[in-house]
Image 1 (tube, helix red, strand yellow):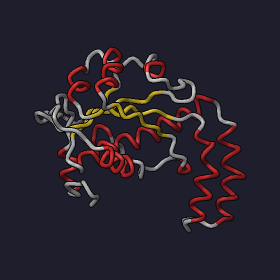
Image 2 (image 1 turned 120 degrees about the horizontal axis):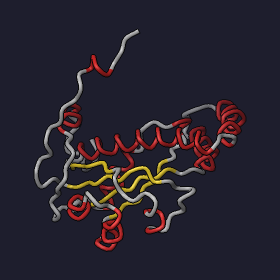
Image 3 (image 1 turned 90 degrees about the vertical axis):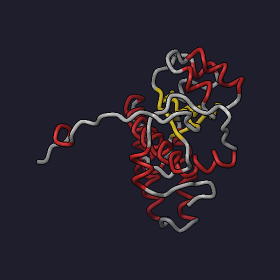
Length: 212
């Protein structure tokens, strides 16, 4: 387990996770532990391992005050959480492809000829994608890392809540981020729940899955 991780019990992590609306405002998360949480979360898969996710950690009172007007229906979570993690996608993440591949070769994760093949075949395909196609790939990848982040938080003993209801048209301007390069994906509150989140019903598998 990680330095701060409290459990690696898979069932506890998956089935114990709840959407928490109110947190203990006295509980804070150190930058060291938050870094560990993000390092573990970013083990999530992504297309060609290009890792298009970017995070803004909003933990200060000033940061929360700037965010608060953008979140109409989730004020308790924002005010009481240890932090709000704003997840964005980087529409220019292809710039990191060569650096990532070179590092994988250096570490012995893949041979140089595979790196060269990917640079010569995959990179041109990415650079020729339309904005909507690229956004579709990035939405998938940032969704994967967001879910993994919430599960990792649970393993560290924290609770979370994914929030999609906020003013997406203004958040980049409020926090000084290029909205064309970094489209917003979601907010994730994280902290120690002041009360346990309620259970929720899931549709039966036979209603959501088909065998062919």
